[in-house]
Picture (cartoon, rainbow, N blue to C red):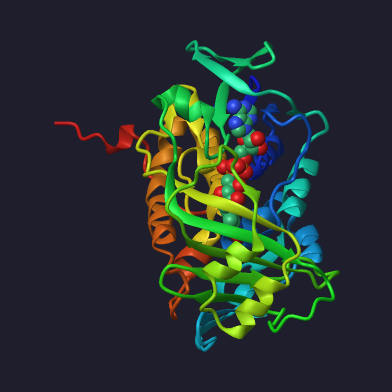
Length: 383
Ligand SMILES: Cc1cc2nc3c(=O)[nH]c(=O)nc-3n(C[C@H](O)[C@H](O)[C@H](O)COP(=O)(O)OP(=O)(O)OC[C@H]3O[C@@H](n4cnc5c(N)ncnc54)[C@H](O)[C@@H]3O)c2cc1C
């Protein structure tokens, strides 16, 4: 891309922040427009699988994350009712040997902070909720809820599940409730719970699951997500306080180990799991989408943020290779759709690592070096 006008990233969440860092490190002038009035880290724990740790290492934040987070020794699948082991995937030092980068669990806010801190001061403009976009051919005009406007050479919509950029490109269409809700809680340090804190453990039943792991190398806090079926999500908010009795009731048939873990939660939140079908058009003219804005997925493979960050790498690579922005955005989307579509589908099934399988197709993906699809013009045949 020859145009060195500023690139606008709408949304300073995990995908937007990582993409802005990548662009800035490649020499682009970047501004991130974030609707929140200030930096607001959300959520408790996150898995950073080797495919995304490879990118985070490349960005320069990998070591700090490893210092803060935990390197689980294994991912162990158990039966929710009997607690018997279904299978174990070795991680720890073997993850790096096998997949080229570690598998880390860490506070989601720690990751977000590291990404924002990797940006030049002033890159993120807070209190900027995008409401309108106009692609004028030479540049894109943005309008924000506070009445302000800005212009950019291109706009990257990294504005998450309820993306306004997506809505402006494709029309209004609400994400659909997946039929599952998740309770999330952190069990405070020094609480006796019958779990192996060195491992990620996932307990499985037909329509519910519990997954638990440690996120902080300096304390023994333990984080869990307990998912179960629900008819509907009727709250206007994206999460509400959780009711412990309601959760315990939903998991009443679970083994003693799981019941002790759920009982140890001090405060709980309850989240709906939303999804959307795969999107065919990720870019139009000088506007492109990434992350949850174009391929939100259920969290069952722990790949939502990983996909958003991988998107950022391929988007940058395509901008670097193509003179025309719309060609770059086309090549980026075509290079990503197969992978994100497959991961969306497996995430929806909630079968990932339930039984022994080789995760290399997810974990060994190297976003910095994977082949891109050929240029659009080179796929045309002359008759
Ligand atoms: C229970 C649960 C567990 C999860 N666990 C994992 C995990 O272990 N590993 C993993 O990789 N992923 C996980 N995910 C998924 C992950 O959190 C998301 O996929 C990821 O945050 C997507 O990044 P994003 O940048 O696309 O969107 P977000 O991180 O949601 O960021 C979007 C940003 O856009 C801003 N925004 C929205 N609208 C506007 C607007 N109009 N103007 C300006 N700004 C706007 C928002 O304020 C927000 O800051 C989990 C998700 C859930 C629900």
